[in-house]
Amino acid sequence: MSRKIWVFDTTLRDGEQVPGAKLNLYEKVEIAQQLKKLGVDIIEAGFPASSQGDFDAVKAVAERVGNTNDIMITALARAVQADIDSVYNAVKYAENPMIHMVLGTSDIHVEKKFNKSKDQILQIGVDAVKYAKTLMPQVQYSTEDASRSEFEYLWHTIESVMKAGATMINVPDTVGFAEPEEFGALIYKLNDRMKNLNPDVLLSVHCHNDLGMATANTLAAVKNGADKVECTINGIGERAGNAALEEVVMALKTRSSVYNVNTQINTKEIMNTSRLVSSFMGLDVQVNKAITGDNAFAHSSGIHQDGLLKSRDAYEIVHPEDVGLDDMELILTARSGRHAVKNALEKLGFTHMKPEEFEGIFEGFLLLADMKKEVYDHDLYIIVENYYEKHDQHNVTNYSDHFFEFEDLQVVSNSSFPSASVKIRKGEEVFKSSAVGTGPIDALYSAIAEITNIQVKLIGYDISSVSRGKDALGKVKITISHEGENYVAKAADTDILKASALAYINAINSVIVAGIKETTVKTPIVSI
Image (cartoon, rainbow, N blue to C red; front, top):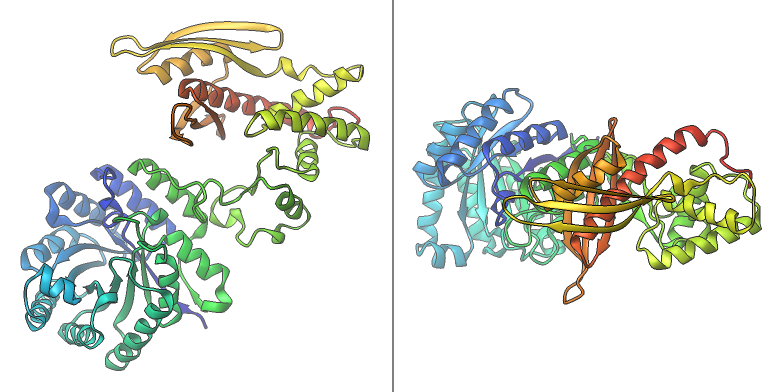
């Protein structure tokens, strides 16, 4: 039978230490509710002694999220009575509360940070645990900077606080100094001694990513006996961040034959949780980030796309559905091969293509792909239309009449009346519109919406730089909602307002494509 691994999420405490990522009370409660839905065992809701605002937020999480016994709520304290009292008074409203305290054990921390002897620090820790135990039955003790600590002193500390009543011992790699083989050996030795002393005390690890090994060190610890992993969503946290919850959990699940453990995480909620944290904290997820990055399940290489279409196992070890995504994404670019393009065309209803016809359409695709970073479904319709018009085919649907094409814009940004004027083509017609808004983007999108006349709701807008210098490219990604369906589109340009307009029009055209597909996929659009 596989061993249970407890998942301790510290997004709301260690994750919130990222500069600029401060959460308000409402946002903390919302994320905590989602973490509960995700299935974490323990939520560390904050550091209540740091401010009245954080105390109130931790208390709110305890009351509103910790109101059932299936999840534990904790918060961080230094090993001093005032901090412990603050944690107690904030988390005591939860059905299953815990006090978590931290105190350094490395020579650097003991001698330079605290300027005390090892015996003095050890006694402070023991006294703190004894005091916390008078308030709550569940107490976790973290041996800060454990990976750089002298082993026998580290063990003496752990042994002492266990005897004082600690129910969980956390061994942090506080500065990301450890290496997997070394950290695994440390955990193996500690686990052996702890289980001989008191098998009911859980051994936990908390790994930072300064050398890019937080996930690897966490997994090495699990393999060597750790009972609990401390992680954050998207790997956010102090400096280079923490072990990413989604990476650790999916590694344990995907390589279950290696680790022989299980968690109670509902992996289908991973993407929802990632997006909520990213949105509230204002921190974009790295596009090539494992599991939660935009490109984690996107494939643009022709070789990969061909292999995936033949067998998903060829290049996919984690199914996107397992983490809450609809499906893998085959992105059509100049690197895409014939198999991927043909598959995309068939999904649009273009079936039974003759080899010479497909080759002509594929040639048109490559010409457009060389000019654009990404080819969308509405582009494929136009490519097909152009091919058949060129070859004098009769009864060709004028797909270009369905889609909008950006022509020009003018945007005025000021504090009083931000305004925008746009010129957009649809088939042979050119439309012009002007609008004011709360800002330049709002004005721009209002002007476009007046022309397209498709009722959508903008639910996501992200802008980032993809190059530097005088001709820097700005990339815009937007998400819109139409009749309950979400559509994501991107565009890049040296003018970020133009990129914003192009992305919005791409999204609108995606809505139009969906409408065309509803009426045409069942019957081929053209017999080719």
